[in-house]
Image 1 (cartoon, rainbow, N blue to C red):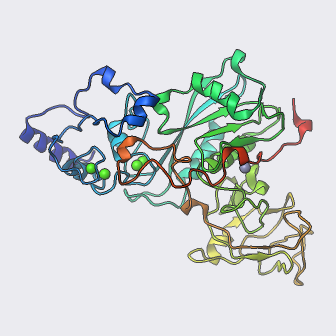
Image 2 (cartoon, rainbow, N blue to C red):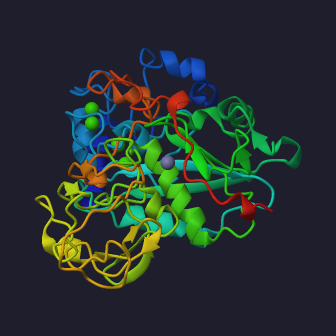
Length: 416
Ligand SMILES: [Ca+2]
Ligand SMILES: [Ca+2]
Ligand SMILES: [Ca+2]
Ligand SMILES: [Ca+2]
Ligand SMILES: [Zn+2]
């Protein structure tokens, strides 16, 4: 709270004859929230924020009266000022027993919360998590407080007990739910994605899976790959979280290996990221739109073309490009050695990037960062979002959980 906000609030409180800070006193039992209570919580009034009276106008019905929204700088006409599907109320005053502000929530900046539990021996190194956190912090996403980026809170919580660490989650979501019911606090349900770092699922060597697109839950299963690196782990976490927030393998579609889709959601990049501005192995979702691309008329000199507002200069910052599992020279703006023969060809040629035996024309790719869905398949969000932003979406999933493809498979010979 800024000094001005403090002054405004304290003079208002003097006027009301109230003192103290935070939410008005609530008895402990009233703050306990179960899943069933969540469902009916829209009807149950939230504790009034200090400075609000029951009669105070609350235009967006998010539980914070218009005057106190002015004090905090939130929008009195939107129950979710920053658009991250965590209500203004929950971000400022918490919800149930969960003090989101203490966990770093900011009502004026996009936040994503993920609880991370892990199998014995698979606790993720903070350096690996920081790669993903940095990718979100550097996102080209603007916020109401004038900042850019998304605050990703990867909250490492606890180790799954050895007796519960099922070596193969199979069927994956049935077994996942056994872990979730035991290791994930229900009060976090409306706000947190839940991630388990495990060994295998569905008897396969896939690196991970998301519970649909978008979704609330994710599994990272690099546990079997004894030599998986921090980069591979970070890339896989960011890839599966990407599915959780609405991204498919082709961005807007399920077409993998699209050469003009420069995103960690494209399998070419999950374990490697990009070289951006000269820095190698930077994890990123697509931050540029690249024009449509024809496999039959490849021009290495022209490389890719940007779609506005992306510019050639934005493409020129991106290199470390990969095609058919080989990293090639050149940047996205010019002189890409698409076929990896270490020569920039001036004659156009044809090449099959997505390995389907057909010369495809890939449509222009999306800028992922402007397309994220923060509601986790309709499950992220609390009742204080109110009637202006219902918890329900017309279509819960772009890809239903049972139609999810397993994500990138690691060579089984790496299994330990
Ligand atoms: Ca309000
Ligand atoms: Ca509001
Ligand atoms: Ca919010
Ligand atoms: Ca926020
Ligand atoms: Zn995937």
